[in-house]
Image 1 (cartoon, one colour):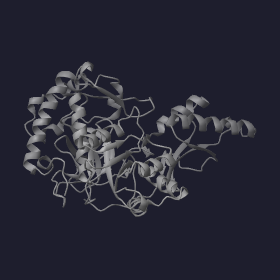
Image 2 (cartoon, rainbow, N blue to C red):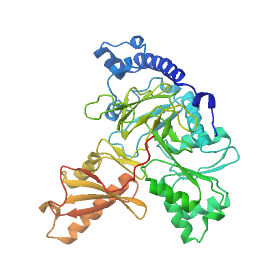
Image 3 (cartoon, helix red, strand yellow):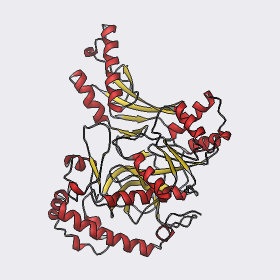
Image 4 (cartoon, one colour):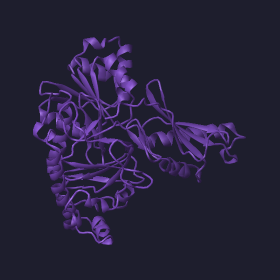
Length: 435
């Protein structure tokens, strides 16, 4: 079994809890001193950081949401002066409710450490060549993977996403051994190999780390069988680090959370009450080592279960089950979060009002497709087909530019969909084994 830092990854539960408490106390003191949002919340409930003497006591603190982060855009949630921030990212390409995320030099060092643990867990060494087929840009995703691979000493190909034929050529010519991408890109590479008449047996691939979107066990089996690799899942939050929050080991029985950097909770998303281990609920994350952008009791919106029993790999840090669902109306499609209100604002800007619409996502030929279904009204020129067609084309163009990839627009008769269901996810994810 390969570890990057066996001492930390296999420490006993008592040591984990003690380290979390110390990290939490330091973090609470820092945010109380430097972040007005937290200081105001603490004072409203008559809470002082020194009041926390156990991990249970900090659960009296209010939850943090993405809307809270957006309200404090860009830098009001930072716990250090901007001159100490060496990296800035944001959580999405759209800026309707933007969130700026900062990293100090020490944050960057910790991020590399965590992704190195992820990669080492699946067998990556300094002899490997990693091809990162994720989009490099303002969102953080691939940068952490690159930093972790370079910490290990592996060779990195920062290929970015897209251009599947070129991806395959580079994979063959550069002798890639590890693929980092979304599952959708992996399936696209398989189709590209078929068109190019390239046998995956002739490649040097040995494993793949996939994330940024939900994917089923059947998809894992297909990727493994057709690329002849081992495929593992990874989980991250741009608000925290991106990749590096949790990852699968070769046991593939849940994703290990780095508990020396994060405190994980599971709550009922309606009552907000804590739930026991093994019960599905919303994941709440508290950072205990982030300097620039610490988060206290951040509601992720992701539904999962948590398990504290040791894994067969020997790691003692808790595991969460793979994430297929959310507790809100946000859809994760092609590695991007899509909310109805985002689409609604664009529709309003174009048409002057917000029509009844529904977002529907389904997987077609191994690729997620997002459909915006809009109810027909007299305001859509249905007595003039040319204007109707032009209107739909304009919507398609604007929505696709907004998301950065193709969105399908359909005008439908009233009553076609349930207006009380703003999103419908027709993808099917077979349930993974409980951790």
